[in-house]
Image 1 (cartoon, one colour):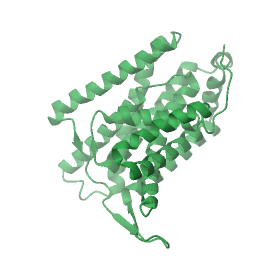
Image 2 (cartoon, one colour):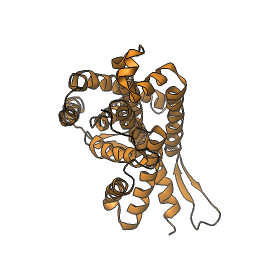
Image 3 (cartoon, helix red, strand yellow):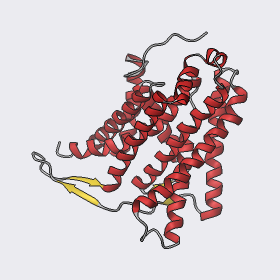
Length: 312
C-alpha cells in the first residue's frame, strides 16, 4: 500500500495524455458519428515530428543552452501543425468521399489509413535515421522528491510530468472555450446536432468537419510530443495501443462528450497504473479493456454521456 500514492500520481500523468488523444476521437464522433481509427497514428506522427525537432536542436548544440520552455514550444508547434494538416488530409481524401457509404466501408478505410501512416513513418525514419526507434532528448530533467505527511516515503515527481499535466489542462480549457464560446464552436455543435438543418442555416458543413479534424488532430499531435518527452522512446507502433486506450477513455467518459472524454482518460490512466502496480506492469493493459467491457455492459453511454435516439 505504500506505493499507492506514487502509482496514483503516475496514473494521473498518463491519464492526461490519454485525455488529450480521446478528445480527438470524441470530436470527430460527435460531428460525424465516425470512429477515426487513424487518430492514434496521427498522435504518433506528432511524437516523431516533435522528437525530430528536439534531436535537431541537440545536433546543432542548442539543446543544452536553449530554455526548456522554448525547446518544448519549438517541438510542439510543428508537431501540432503537421498533425493538423495530416488530419485534414485524411478527412478530405479518405473519409469525405465515403461519407454516405455504409459504416463498415468507412471503418475499413480508417484502418487502411492507419496502416499507411504507420508504414510511411517507418520508411521515412529508416531512411533518415537508419532506424525507427528514436530516443527522445530530455527537456525538463529535474526530479522532485516531495514529502507528504502520513506517507512513509516521499513522492517522486518529474518536472516533465508537471508540464504534461499543465499543458493538458490549458489545452482542454482552450478547447472548451472554442466549442462553447466561438462562432466556429456553435457551428460544430449545430453540425453535430443536425448537419442538414445546419447547412440550410448557412453553415459550410464540409469546412466545419475539416475544422473538427484539424483541432482534434492538433491536440493529438501535442499529446504525442508530451508523451515522447515523458517516456523518452518512441516507435511507429505506439499509435495503435495508445490510440485504442484513448478510444476506450472516450467511451468510458461518454464518446461525443468532451469533458467526459477528459474524465475517462484520467480514470483510465489511474486504474491502469494502480492495477499494474499490484499485479505487474505487463498486465496493466488488461485493466483498460476490462473497464471498457464493464462500461459497455452497465452504462453504454459512458459516465457523462447521454442516451440519444439514432438519427434517421
